Image (cartoon, rainbow, N blue to C red):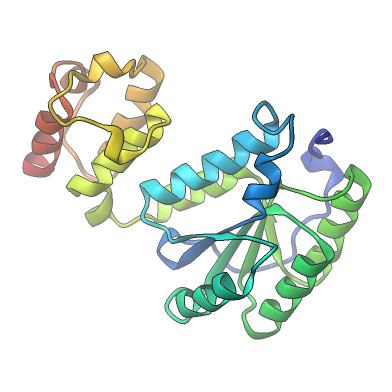
Length: 234
């Protein structure tokens, strides 16, 4: 049974003084297979937050590593390779004593570790709060899912956001789908892209210099034409 996630007021303030950037991040999802095996996983707030982190990472081309706790060696090797090019490790998932040791080791060589405090789980709420307090005192950064999504979006390069791939990934994220599941010739409204999602996408694209309106998206007919409009007129 997953416990109710802690509120911001229950968590120690982070004392880290560096800024998170999507272009420098690697997302580490720990123990996802084990978590998915839990009966109440699919309806939990934790599952929703982890999935939102994964979808945003996919949308912004942030590398994602799934750490299987039964065989961590290969993933840790790949993580080392990624961190040689990107300095920031973003952590979600299952926090065990072994994971705590791994993070302490990584922190000894790389200070830029960010724990998503509402996308992790420990044995109980008390240990969750205590661990966040401990890593805060060690100058590790921690934040909630909403803050992560906002900072990643703000730091994403315009060239990617308004590229064909960036547009495709952003629409897929808004729909809760995988990019490969989208048909460029399909009517966007057939995907049930609601008004809130359209406004969010338009806001993202306009913030990065695109000349597009809510009505343009509604009348674009399909994703392929929308991509062409954005890449030609941005």
